[in-house]
Length: 318
Image 1 (cartoon, rainbow, N blue to C red):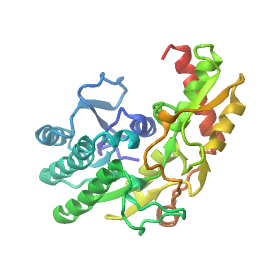
Image 2 (cartoon, helix red, strand yellow; image 1 turned 60 degrees about the vertical axis):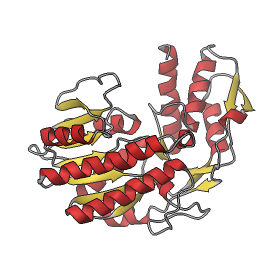
Image 3 (spheres, helix red, strand yellow; image 1 turned 90 degrees about the vertical axis):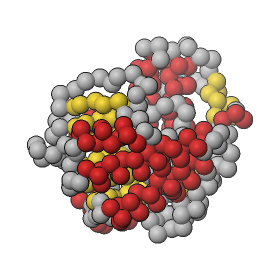
Image 4 (tube, rainbow, N blue to C red; image 1 turned 90 degrees about the horizontal axis):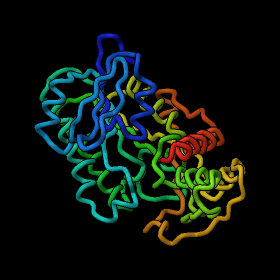
């Protein structure tokens, strides 16, 4: 992905997606990885330089950008949880929107050529039962989506005003090993893993199983970000999606068939989300046609790898 004299900066690098992106790019050139200062120091690796940076601190971001002197940036840092955003949008705006403003302003001030991939979200779009392309109306349906739309608009506006080489990626739902159990698939997998070990009664608690979501393996998604970084025309916007909406019930059924024990499923009202969209599916025609990315990992492998990862976590007492 990178030449030996190019440095890649990854923000939010110790998060779910960031950890998989690092797996993919470490060894291909020097990498500077930012993590939130209040978190534990991540593990070291050859060619990887960790820095504790709070993206809501403009001065700290400016210093860290000047120190890193990157040639390429993948901006992943952000507040990611849709359900939690209903409890208050201000932290989401500070991290997702203002954090992006701080980063791009610092890169503009640095005055050196730099390709930037800003990762926003499919949540910026108006909900639709039909596949959503990049020209769909931008009408978010959650506080999280509102914060990501602010990020998306800011990124493109600052890129124009400061003449920055910015590309925007709008991912739809993605999952895989290491995702926290606050999302449907890892929640199911964690519960199954704990039940198998006798750490929990054989009851799996679920929310709404009738929704349909476009779901891509996180390892495919970081491959998309790498492809965008390498090949995308400046200023372009790309959906990152599978183009297929999976019914949550069907995903759960597949996981249950992979289980080593019998499990009873019960609906839990506390797991229901406000304003849950019935269907969300993306149109990935543009990214396929223009830069040649398409997901390749089958959903069965994603589910099995996620369940196996949670089995390891359960055995380790986590």
